[in-house]
Image (tube, rainbow over all chains, first blue to last red):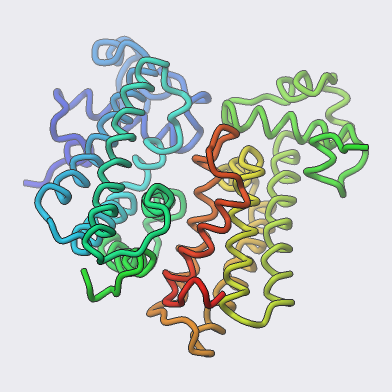
Length: 206
Length: 206
């Protein structure tokens, strides 16, 4: 039994109607931008009435927040899980990059909304998402700093290096399409090697 | 005598009213997205009537095209100029990265529109911009390939490496703000070193 695209993206969201609305919102926001999309557009793309949408989400901003929070939580879980289980810094960095890059390629439409519509979040919701972003950045900085301490990495400025590592992953969402020649997994592997080098380690170190 | 912000951005565009409209369009598109912005919004942000806008630009799409083409031409000029004058591959890559990154930091609002609103361009205009993008990518690939041939770089896949180099620069437009602690020039320098390492050269090689 295969899951629907919406169920694969948001296994924790219930009922299925809420997930279908989130998927319709992602597609509408990605195509025309948040501000040019109405709740009516989203409801109609999900095959529902505007009234049915409001049963699940009180506003368009609530939908954006659900999409954004979930995307950031997934990114944080992926990065934090590697940091907690892999204590060899080069291997940890390689796995973080492989998974972060592959996620942004595989989920490029969702990731575009997650990464490029932050400014449209209401203030309180923005603060919650900004906190998740700070935790993602801190986790990546800590893994790089651990590699500097262990002598595996040679980095002049850990903050800038962490920013560059995350930037490489995030920007994949901008240019990756279903027609891209490299698969998400292959791209993750190639970027993992580039990043290890960038941090002053040999690709074989990870 | 100091130039107006619009004259600094587009010294080749005349008259000044056309430049002021381009600046108003950049600010509106960056804030609310292309699709949610009307020509009336743009005219009014420039302190002009919609009729006065149409004297200079026949449509909102024509304004986006003028902004996008000019941004891509500036990027291409910067990259092509280094490639034509600096024949030592590590020094060429360092300068390309320094200037490309600094441009995306300094011009982050314009760069956001240039990089993130491609899909809104009409087909014929999109093709012209896509051609400029291909020329930018090809120039960066050629510089990296020259460094592989000269033995300065060790890169498994020149295409992926060039993509990563450009990605690092483009993504600066997403996160850089006027409140960022690192200046555009400093950021360009730091990224230049990271990129040389990523390509398998010592930062001192460039």
